[in-house]
Image (cartoon, rainbow, N blue to C red; front, side, top):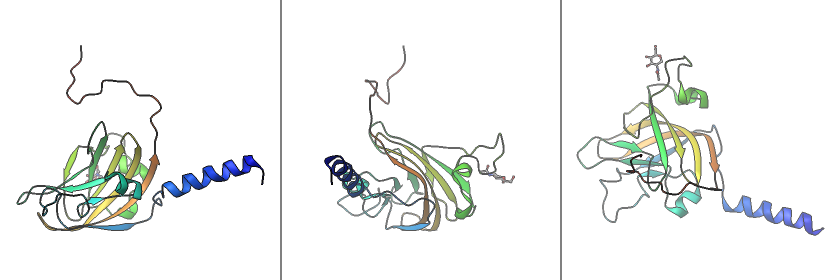
Length: 183
Ligand SMILES: *[C@@H]1O[C@H](CO)[C@@H](O)[C@H](O)[C@H]1NC(C)=O
């Protein structure tokens, strides 16, 4: 084997072995034991967050958080920390199977009826949601449905990933701040 082939092989092995990406369009289930802010000490993501990759687990960076204080209604969160952006949309009681990437943004495929995206969103049993992630290292689109839900208690979702990419920032403008005004 020549050295060029060797290098290619190494690169290939390194890439493949570091991150296993989620398989697109396949429906899977996730169970949350309790909302993030209503769990026994010590507080951790393990039983209240969806991790789409082991990379997320290793970085303690979930892709979706099941959250809410004890005794209050629960919400899903995606905008988790740093300069990460994420948005969620509640599409209502529509079958998860029908939500393509295109329908994740405009379920009815009708001009003027774009799905509305917000930061954190109430958990409703039987509703289907779309999530967009624009984090420093992840760009993703996934859809999920609340199969069962107990206020301040456990929840089960079904989900399918529509797009997922690991990103590397090449250059970034300095000075990002959530509260910086403009001048
Ligand atoms: C799609 O259309 C139906 C029927 O007009 C409407 O009830 C529903 O809210 C629309 N869905 C979205 C996500 O806009």
